[in-house]
Amino acid sequence: MPEPQDGSRTRRSPRRRQAPAAAALAAATFAAFASGCAGPPKDGGTDGESYRLSAGTPAAVGELDSFTWAVYAEPPTLDYVSAFDYPQNTVLSNVCESLMRWTPQLTLAPGLAEKASNPDPTTWVYDLRPGVRFHDGRVMTAEDVVYSLGRQTNPDNAAAWAQQFQNVSSVTGTGPLQVTVKLTQPDSQFNQYMATAAGVVASKAGIEAAGRDYGTSGGLACTGPFELGDWNKGQSVELRRFDGYWGQKAKSAKAVFRFLTDPSARVNAMLSGEADGGYLIPTESYGRLRGSGSGTLYFGEGLSTVNVNVTTMQGVLGDLRVRQALSLALDRTGFVRTGLGGAGHVTGSLTSRAAWAGAPEEVRREAFEGLTPTAPDIERAKALIKEAGATGKTLTVATSPIGQDVSVLATAVQSAGAKIGLDVRLKTIAPNAFTALFTDPQAREGVDLFPETYYDSITDPLDLLANFRTGAFQNFASFSDPAYDDLVKKAVNASDPAERFAITAHLQQIASDQLLWIPVAEWPTAVFLNKRITGAPTTIAYMYYPWAADVGAAR
Image (cartoon, rainbow, N blue to C red):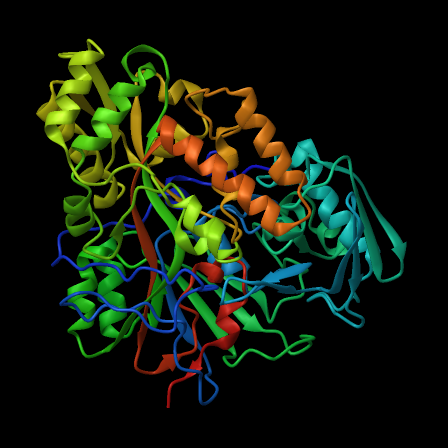
């Protein structure tokens, strides 16, 4: 069954899994989602703070010659098979397109396939849009789709999305503009992932002509509203409007992405106008940006939860009572206030509420009933540690200067341990090495816990909960329960969404009861736009939706 991958698989580097740098700001209570909401709410507020979730930003009123966007790191490659992290996808989503499309409302829509049909449980048929041109001038055909998807399963490519194809038995062209995917078993997730970089279509001839250089220089031979322009290594990458685009033309003739690794430099660039905007705003700058008068800071749905990842069930953490005690001693409210700058809300759920938007109301309610308690109970936690015979035992939690969300949460775990009789020690790891926690079992040796922010690539809670299946990529603690595995398989195989969500709700309860990860908070997507531009989506859809095409003049 498909499972999410992280920088680890490279699908999720710590930045793919972690939020950007954060620091203390005044507390704000994050607006909770209405149970019937599909995507971000139209309005929501916080107590005593002008913080709202916005469904979007105002539509552009005119075109631009260019705009400049700040990103925190340079993509190592723009090859779509490796697009599993923020920098790559923020750029690539505007150049390369997928069979399906994730909308700014976090719903699924047709993409390069104008129609997707499921004639039987193990077959997906994609009817392609006619007359779609690649940036190299060639017209898209079924052969290009078969070739593009095939690159995801080629072991030589070490594709980040390979797991999403593990139930695929064949991908064949069944007409000049039709591709049929045969599965070995029903897979309710497959078509959803076709809206991510897993479903990107590029020109077969263009990729073969680029050879080993594909993704690092020259063009990308894709179909998006922008094509790759100049790439000044270490400084910036430029996208140029593609006038042969099949859909609505981009409102800006150019989009320039500047690589600004220092958070202060990134914010200063946005305040000075050197950069017109950016996602992944350092949370310590929220107040500064709000009060600058130079633009607007928006918040939208991120489908993201901050958790403490349990890396081993051996030793002291193998006792559920110890995991429960740590959770009960954790100051979640303090973390949201300090680590997330108030931009989030405490949760006892590993999955975000928005991920359940498509579930029946009764199932949504059941999925969130009786989950991990979030209010501290130090006395109960102490009693659990004593019952477990764990008083004075040592645990190691990884921390890193990658961002204050990481360091503050690690310190909060250490503080929680000290209050209940555990000796929790911090192990500081350099940002690049912290990434290895997701990819290298050896890097996790000697580490019992580490902070992780997980975001879904599809609007489905199974994206996260499948991580605890036996042998799953992010099942670092090697949790194994045949009953859980069977439920995951049933959920994946379920063609009826209501049935799938009901099974997934049961999975959520098991994961909560076992505290496979310790849930801490939900956090939103943040985007800053200065006064000259508007139109960028506020949701995390920017990872796979051609958002830059919507950016234009604000007045």
